[in-house]
Amino acid sequence: MQYVLATMEDLPAIRKLLARYHKDTIKPEDMPGGFVTTKLSDEQFEDLIVNRKGVTLAKDENGEVKAFALHAGWDYWKQVPIMQRMTEVLPDMPFEGMALDETNTYQYGPVCVDVSVRGTGVFETIFKEALKLYEDRYPVMVTFINQINPRSYAAHTRKAHMTEIGKFDFNDNHYWMMAIKTKAEE
Ligand SMILES: CC(C)(COP(=O)(O)OP(=O)(O)OC[C@H]1O[C@@H](n2cnc3c(N)ncnc32)[C@H](O)[C@@H]1OP(=O)(O)O)[C@@H](O)C(=O)NCCC(=O)NCCS
Image 1 (cartoon, rainbow, N blue to C red):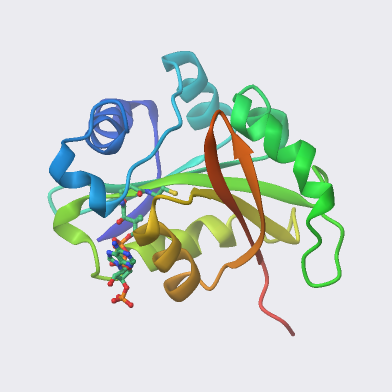
Image 2: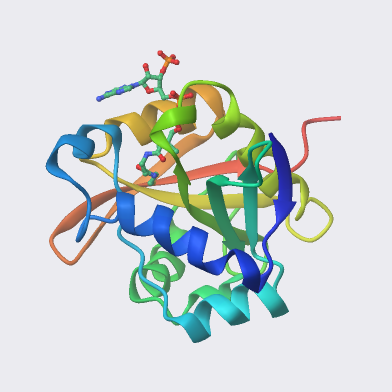
């Protein structure tokens, strides 16, 4: 598996994977494996990919996209309503004694791993790649997980070693807020 930043050529493959696991288009039998809720227009994807270098991919030996992780600062994410809500509640959720805000955190997610490579370490690796990219810019990375997505919670706590720092509601859904330091303790 190769881990690379996406270019616009990868957008159709990213969209295909996103559609497969998006709550609006996922097959009922895939739901227990987790789902995502974020929607981005082509223009928003172009800004993320081209200007922010904000999409990491896992590609197999045939160049097929098997996983993606999105990541960017809040100046990008605040256009997405749930992320705007995250910036409002973050200051009430300190992490390891640190007050969090838009200046010392960035947001990773959604992340999607194709069912064919789940549980193989692809998730851990793409997560680490997304963390490493920002270690010189932000001390903490945060994300949100829907409380009806236990697989994602298990993966992010047990495999990615993220910590739950609080809960918040948005549009009648209940979410966990998760955090991790971008650099391991010296
Ligand atoms: C969430 C996701 C990225 C995790 O990647 P993954 O490769 O499946 O993760 P892993 O298999 O390494 O780890 C998942 C863990 O959850 C456990 N798990 C599986 N189903 C579970 C469930 N219903 N409840 C609780 N834990 C569950 C697995 O056993 C595994 O833990 P273990 O290896 O210690 O046994 C992937 O499943 C995915 O893309 N799902 C669809 C989209 C999604 O939900 N994205 C995240 C949105 S926040």
